[in-house]
Length: 348
Image (cartoon, helix red, strand yellow):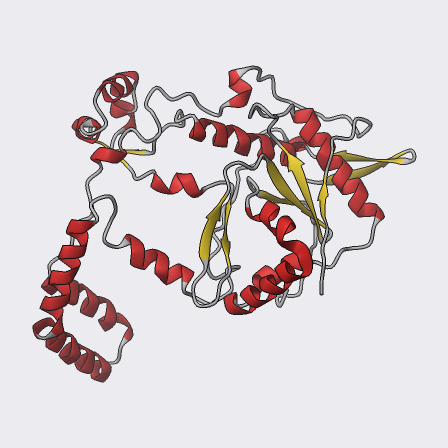
């Protein structure tokens, strides 16, 4: 049975000094934003996605199919769709409308949309995991997540970018939790609508009417419900269908380094973000520890397996006594990888 260790990275006071470039203090350091419009202010008045007519749905499907099918295959498909439109289609359309009527708190497409992803057995990396690029820092010195320079007998680890990321994510999380993160709004003409007047008008309207007030400015609030799933959660593999897990009580984030897993506290007991220099020093300690030891068993690589295979492997890890470690990983605020593997091999 495989046991793996989850290390707790306590702040190392003798770690290299942090080159911090921020001057934020108080609430400016603790919160990314302090929006006058509450984060979820528009949710109750958002318009629900309407169910299209059966004929429109069938025609849209055929229009998409025509692009990829041969003429013979398309004719067969068209015959099947027109037959469906007259046989099972109307009864299924009626059932869909009834389902939508009984679930006014969500969209009719939400449950099957989640099922489509959670029931897929394909590995998450490449197939489903989202990918984003962050803009480079205007100061080039802060663009390297990990750079080591030998100075006399010590390594000096510059982790400014990694530290800035960690603190920024925590500031985002605190603003979201306090309902002061600015709601997402699509402005047709930002110069005219993304104004103080717009924000003052919308904040005074009750949540059940706020969307209509925004639209009067030709600004369209977007759904914010998925923001609640941004932090402290993961997708746990299960046979046939995965499950989503969250633990908002956790105050740490995970760090991966040379196959080892570390937990780094980012909030204190009162929920405030720890000083950037403390987080920087913890990351420096992790890098120094990783450089001095051989790579670990790399349990994290199991997450790239087929979902049923990963579910079986996870069950073995739990049975081997790793339940608590996995719980800490699953509920972490986010995961930061400090590995610097570079390869020209496309299979990797």
